[in-house]
Length: 466
Image 1 (cartoon, rainbow, N blue to C red):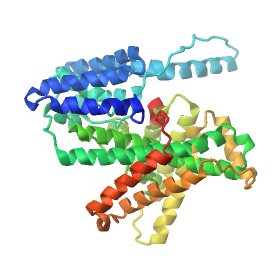
Image 2 (spheres, rainbow, N blue to C red; image 1 turned 135 degrees about the horizontal axis):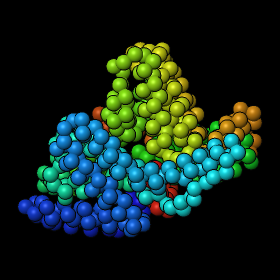
Image 3 (cartoon, helix red, strand yellow; image 1 turned 30 degrees about the horizontal axis):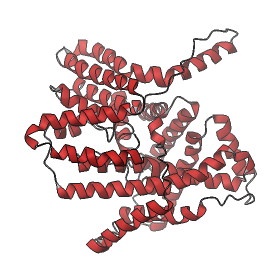
Image 4 (tube, rainbow, N blue to C red; image 1 turned 90 degrees about the vertical axis):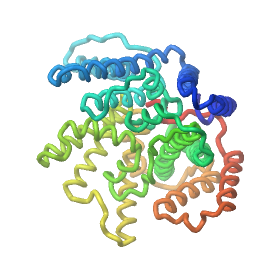
């Protein structure tokens, strides 16, 4: 059930109230209540797919226990066995058709006509997120970073916790499990902070991202009928749309978790003010970047190896990132572009910007934004041919004719608010505005804007499909 749906906002006050009405001395009942709610909300989409969630939970929980009790040589084989068991639903639901189609195409090129039947299955919602979270726990136990969890109840809640199960953030067991094991009493300040995050997340999702999406969808779905300038503007708008959409979800997840007494990782830190693509990945989808670093990049050898091997490790890590996002060559190319950009930055020694010169810094930010924006075109388009076609149109038909004005009025209001907020957060300019009256006025203004120009159609979040 999407956080921006009316149904969710009808039931969430009840979820919140019943949770805090359960006395703290009955902590186990509070956990079971959250498990029940988490599975109930997950099954609201397709009930049968809750079995996939439970399978991944059981495979990693019991797999970790077996791993911990075996010698290292045997554990090396077992970790791959339990990893494959846990990843099997993800591979089957998300990648089977892609692999099947490409193998069939490859065989046809050499004159062989053979094809396995395709699977007409929907992909379980959030499967990439909860699978990576559970597999991360499995590897943490294998590397002896943590002890295997003893309580099955606590672990079930860790994997299925409803604020993050469909679109992250991807939590580490060492962060979330201790909070689950020791639930805190109600904290008014934490509750207020949670509601503020919730409000800001709703604003950048409903008012910024969804308004931009109305423009982007019209142009991208019929780009042949629009000018190169319109296509360029749509690509820039999509860059902000996907940020507002995903950051909006993450902030809502953080806010809802806070109102229930839990702190989960912040997934974003002003990513479009990055001075390099390397810096971008320290700020964008932070929980995934951390997962890739801990369980792909470092096991491959990280940076403690030769330069060539290090560049290869970066390439493979971002190839995995592209594949994780979807079973399509567009995602793979997107991941490779980010990997190659970081390899070039590392070779040139320009991952950071040490200069205090404002002009140099903002030039670096502009260049990084342009690279990221260009890569998002491949991420957004359904095929490589269409991605190259729209890029070609930007360079060969760049005129301001057929300019699409739809939704621009609302965008002119909403987008600058998000950009100004990020600039003020990045450069710590909020201190002079930290008065209760200004805070309350800002909250009321955001709420009014949500009601006036927000897209209140319960539209799905972009990253739910990943």
